[in-house]
Image (cartoon, rainbow, N blue to C red; front, side, top):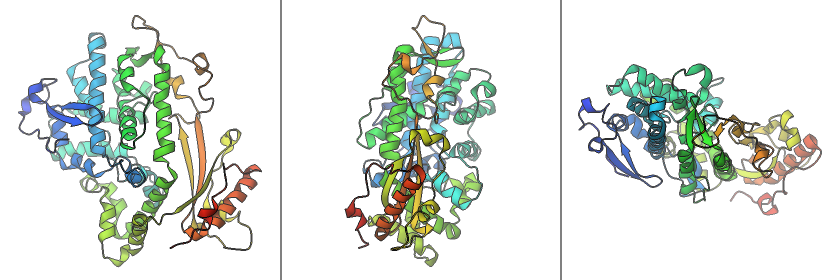
Length: 471
């Protein structure tokens, strides 16, 4: 990828109208999508310190310590989503442009939404907002999507970017579309809000890029072909619909995402490292005031993954506990994954989140006495984006390109091999010290017996792990 992506040499009067004129586009070669072309207005956002910050945010956080190739950044992903948003608009404009009234400004707006959708992301993937902030700021409702909106405004103001306020509002609405109701929020060309962050049914170019990019980086195969969906989509009644014969292609989108959650994002060792990283940041928060960065975009853009190196190389006594935890990560002295079980399908409706207290209360008398601070319990939810519901029931299909009617398709009309349940809940337990693994594992088994009347884990904790001591 080229190191410099300068856009200031392009006259300002052409930035909004250059369109696909190659004279005004900069090319970047991406290892997933090949040559991508960046338009002048987008370059004005890219060539800012706030957007360049994304280079220092790994797309998959601490995952690279388990999958060494997973060192790609939010910067690459954001350019990829920009390019796929452009590709989606190109297909729609080519085949239905006149019918849908698609204008060049619509294309530009969707591309900017794709480019800026993650500009407010925090360090270490989703760990910052889901694990760290809730534990240091009680009751806080904060999301990287909301911060992306604030950061977009900040970039426009800070760098005097000439963009129509109404179009800027549309960009921000598209970034946050997954959090809003399509039917009530967007009155005109609502299909445009399905492209980057699809709150209607979950099919969007954000997923197209990260599924392909993350699978490649981790050395995993990916049998989902998003290009087939580009070729087999059309807008009917202001909604992007897909050709019925591509039902299984759509299903592979959601199943591929679930597979990545199971094998990569929620990998037991990845989570162990993330849990240690969270604890290190929590212990450092009082001194470094990390959480205060979220109050102001002017400060927030200075926060990235290098915060860990700041802690690790500091000599301040106030950061010693945090440094010790990071040193344990470096030396692979990790929190120990003891075991896990999948909540039985018939118990999902009444599932109660498991806690360290549950495990401590399940230990037998005698031997090591466990304390809640010795244990971490995670309740991992893996689904197809719609919780217990089948996301494909929210998607509309059409028969062929001569059709003007859209319809839904039930799973059993396609195959009886498709899943009948759309969510897993996995309960895991970790011991913070190797010498506690045996006691924690035994208490975890007792907890299962108390809760379900049987052991629901696949197998017992290996004896080799039970007997491991701190070196």
